[in-house]
Structure formats: structure tokens, C-alpha cells
Image 1 (tube, one colour):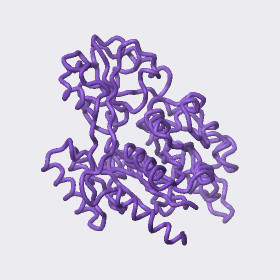
Image 2 (image 1 turned 90 degrees about the vertical axis):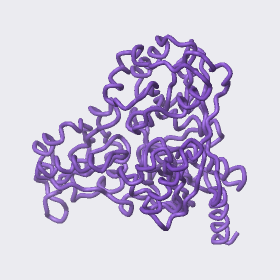
Image 3 (image 1 turned 45 degrees about the horizontal axis):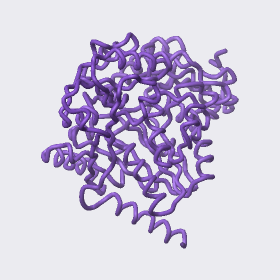
Image 4 (image 1 turned 135 degrees about the vertical axis):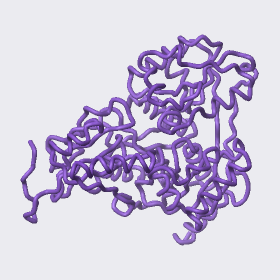
Length: 457
């Protein structure tokens, strides 16, 4: 039942808000800003980027007492219709890794429908923590923030003897009511939560490295759970969003292979402007001019940040097996799709090893083929997509159909184990490495020393 016409406790009509999202920032903004505000009536969420998340409901148990029926999650393509039929006063944009022009096209659609258009900033949406927070963000998906987060968590545990909790940016693609707070310490936890391939790409490498991972939907509750088990919180960001937590040290990642995208996407430009430290990553794969351009563009946007050069060395588990063979390359899914990369580490490693890389398109199953039409920039690689069991089955079918000798998998998850593949799989792995001074290691050491002094240790 609509609450249109119902007045708030102040006697004024409730402002009607539509939140544009992609199953992450949108839910967080609702939880921390709108959920308990009697002056606001959120009429719906919309969904984009992630297949299959429209048509669900944000459940009553998460929506709070003002929304006893929960909230619908509808297709963003219906924006104008929703503004009209639900008499929307304000459209709030709440997802990431989109160009500035895409944001303003959505703003134009909202404004033409008569609604205000808004973006919620860090002051209203960042949660304060009781533990020190080191946050990793990026200007684009695929810059290498996850490998830096893995290195950071391991370094804090191994060298500084800190108990670390990794808070991962949300990916609640399943049953929202059961995903309020998630804790992952083992592969069995991933199985019990029925994690998608996209979730496994982020959680599984942390678990393999011995890191404790928290995620979910309600990040005030997620943070509370993590703080009970940690001395330091590492925020492992998703896409190019800014952190949900207020960081004590904010590290942003720039991709040296995309030096001109430092300030082209939302909210990646926000992240680089906010950052204390900017890591220019993949300097080992980029040309010298690309590296210098990335540094210059970063310094122009945020001259106060410390700029660190980093490498992202890629290695194949068995490069000799790959040489001369027909190979299907499987890459990290989001990096290749809405991250905009034509290929990733797997392609580079296979090419260096002398493989004959085979185009996956002729073998694409029905659940995978449309992805190549939706993202025409994709090169001769297969993004590891598996947002639901049907798409995961289509991914397996595509791989098994491919007329190749073996698969090079650069997705961070164990694809062979997840899909039960018959084809041989060689994994391509990539990690963080400092590539000069100042170093990220030195910056983290100084941060921990400052925190110890301020705590009186």
C-alpha cells in the first residue's frame, strides 16, 4: 500500500525517493540515510549492471518499520515511467563504475520527468569504526585493488601481528534476508552461502591467504561483527566506489594501462581526489609514457596524495604446458564486462607463453552469447560470469564446447573445482609488488607506528 499523502511527524508530506542502484551502494545508502527517516518515503530501488537482480524485493526484515512490505527492485529502464506513476520527488543515484556522461544522462531523464537528482556523499554515508580502517578503492574496476587488499591483510597479520578483518564491498545477489551479515573463513562457508562466481572471485583468494572476510547487506551490523574479531579493518572496495567506512588511511589505485581514466568515471574521480595514497599499478606491463601520464593525471587531480608505483606480475602455474597450444582464456568477469577491459592478465600470460588464443564466441552457450553483444569491447577472452546457477552452467558449457587443448584461467577463483571441468586448466595468478620508493610497505609501516604511539603502546 502506498503511503502517498501520509504526512511525517512534522506535518509535512513525505518526500518520495527513487534509488537507482546495482545491489550494493543503493542498499547501503538506504540503510544509513533513509530507512528510519519519517520525512522520506522510498518508493523503490532500480537495478542495473548485474543480470537477474531486478524483480526481487528488499525484504521487510532489512527495510525497517516504515516499510512493512519491503521495497520493490525494478528495472532502471523504466525510470521515466516510475517517476511518473510513483510521483517521485527525488531520484538518488547510488552505484559505481559509470562514466560522468552516463550519470548526467540519467540525471537528465530524472529532471525531464520533474524529479530532483541527487548523489549522497561520504559524510552522510560513511560509518565510523572503533578499529583503525585502511581502505582500498580504485578509479576503475580492474585496477588491481583486490590483490593489494590481499597483500595488505597478509602483511598486517604476518609482519605487524594484527588481527585483520577484510570488509568486502557488497555483492548480495542471492536471498537478501539471509545475507544481512556474512562471515567467510573457509570454502565451506562459501558453499553454505551459495556464493556466485563473482562473489567467489573476491572471497576465495582472501580465504586461501588466511584472511577473514565479512560482507552482507547491512554494513552497520557487518562492521559490528568484524570489529569483535579484529584489531584492524581492511576495506576491500568494489568497482570504483568510495568506502562505506570512514578510513584512517585511504589508498586509491590507478591503472597505468588506462592512464587517461583517472578522472573520467564516477565515483572513481571522487576516490582519487579523497585518497591519502595513490598506487599507480601495473607499471611492469605499461609503457614508460603510460606510467608517466598516469602519474601526471593523478597529481593534477590530487596534488597532496603520496604516489606509489606498483607492479602486478603475472605467472602461469605451468607455462611450458601452454606454449604452442590452442588455449581458451577465461578472465575475471567484472573487469572485462562493465570494467571496460578488452582482456586481462590471463590473455597477457598466455600470449607471453606462446599460446594460440582461441576466440570463445563461436562456442558461447545461450546464457553467455548475449554478453558479447552487450559489451562489444571484449577481445578474444571469456569473462567468468556466474551470477546465478543458470549462467554458471552456461559458462561451463561454453568452456567444454571450445575446441581447445586447455584453458588458461585468470579468474581469482578455482574455476576447475567450481565447475568440475573436464578440460585441463592452467591458472594465471597475479599479485602486488612495490616498484620503487615511496613504497606501500613503508607507508603501512609508518601508519601502524603512528597508531601504536597514539594508542600509548
